[in-house]
Length: 437
Ligand SMILES: [Zn+2]
Image 1 (cartoon, protein in one colour):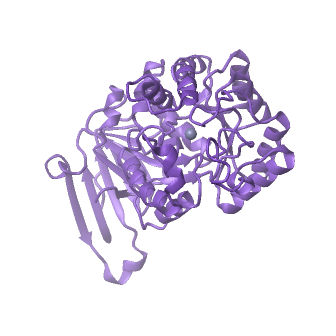
Image 2: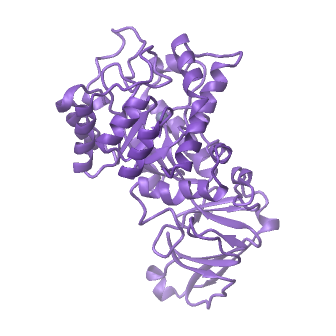
Image 3: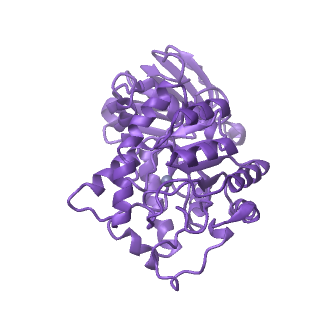
């Protein structure tokens, strides 16, 4: 990623270290760029200066502001005409997994440790694509928590992770990972694996995920495309179960993401008070008024719909007949319904379902959102300000303002003018540090 650094970017380190004061002196980084979208939703600035101390933005100034160098070490990056956006946020990933032919049987032989090692590579690809934070909504085992904590300790490179643990699902529901296998292969799953029926078990399953380390809760309100069942994509939890999950999660300070394709499940989940609907494929007029009344976000994951449609209609389709039927029914409608929801004023938060698609290809979603009728600026707003709110991290990320993490991405072409440019980040910073060095 930094191959062209030496010819296109001037970097200088000005060191005037005062040895007696070294311990308390912050690391200062000064960034110059030609265009800056520091607060998506507002107009971009032209030439700008960002000053960072340690992990944090301390000032954002219009124009090129030369710094009076005092004691300490100052690193200056001069990016010339380049454009800077806040670090991107993907509200729907599955970092411990990537779908491919044979994925179904891999579950029988793959240990949690192997998922964890693969996830290290997927996390790196994700941040190199410009995503400095993800919300991981559903992963088995403990790998996702180990990955999150290892990244937070600085041991491995990856995005900040808001992790859900196992999705909460009814027996045989979309998140029941024992679907389609011989009954004696897996233990009957319970609350620790997210499988719950009835109000009491639903409360217990939420508590169990929080105990395991969950930052947010994912539930499967309806059937899903990729589960090995012909039970369709309609509502699978009863209303009282949905309410029990939402109430317990909120009491424990966790937001709730609801996987939902069918209209009945979307509307039941919204009535129960979920914070986001994932996919939202068959939303209707009632859904739109419920979204607007509750303030819930739609996380559209159009890329997942496109990916499963391409596989199901391709020559090398490796889905089972049940999955093929669902993929062909659901995939094509997701983009049109995003366009409709957006036109009607539903709040959109960016999410890709990466893991269904290849990790690191997350930026493809932006072009699909523009094709659905959003402007480039609106898609970037969805992937920064709105996504930060949905992650519960608006005080720390989503914009480049004093007091927030210095998470940002540098582009030589301006994604606000051509959204395709967002696929080509030049350099990614997380917490003031360059990724890839
Ligand atoms: Zn998903």
